[in-house]
Length: 443
Image (cartoon, rainbow, N blue to C red; front, side, top):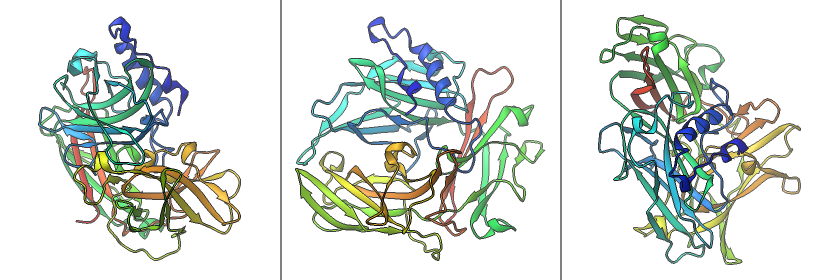
């Protein structure tokens, strides 16, 4: 994790006087760890991180939709939920703060009083100890907005969590979005019309109607972002309309908004430790811990496409026959094996990828090659549930990411796509998120 992200200081003993400065500092450094324009395969999600080996199973989502993105409507009953576990013997007391950023995740020109009604720093009071598990942990839960904080404007937000008694280091950071339904988005997916991408890619037709906002310069006042499966992972950013007809912005053209289809995510089911679920070879208990060996995976690059329902890279915590999976599900060392006869050329790495890695391509998720088994291997301590994952290849020098090397790419793959439309008229101090729509390639 970028060391710059770990230097932000929240001085609780001085009445949180540095919070405003923190808004500017965090967003600035975070933005400068990435290119301003995302490509189809970016280098990973550096806006979100977990800076403690004791913190596990971090999830953010909309209340009531665990597989959804953490995006809510302004002034509605919607809530964003952040959950995580502390598996240490002495769990911390955690507090959080909320930061507002512009559409590029640079600092917005708003003061804290402009975007929240409530306290600048608050404790996370909702926590529960695990029950009947081999690995003891404390489960923390935060919902936003809440009685301490009300959100006053739309846009991009960061949640920062830190130990209440050691505020110098941010333990984890996650993003969420608040939107106003002020523009109408019409989007559909189709097969590209020609070229090599016809059989491997997916293309979006997109129109945005701005009748309910006063736009004088749509090419500069409107910022449109389109992402595949996970917000800000593999996105087209700040795309410009091809033509404007009154309030109608049209983004469709033969070579625009094309995404590699990829393949369905691989899946395993560990919600029971009494039998081997889908994708699991064996389950053992030794050393006071559970160990789950997954079935050996192989390259799917040259295989025929096969449809099966997946979670588009996400996971769900689940314990069979339990109504309290969040505190009764256990942890297990989970072993991933990717069979391939030869190690990749020097300078190329294989990474495990999905929500289980926090959508990260960091060194801790880099797989090691075992020449005796002729396979790449990695293990992770994961909570029981249903998980999606895939294997990505990265170029260590250029940062280029190849999702097709072991997975292949097919037009038929089921993917979800999210469209975000930001609006900042001349003279405004921040980007309003005025449009949000999610669609799937499978109707």
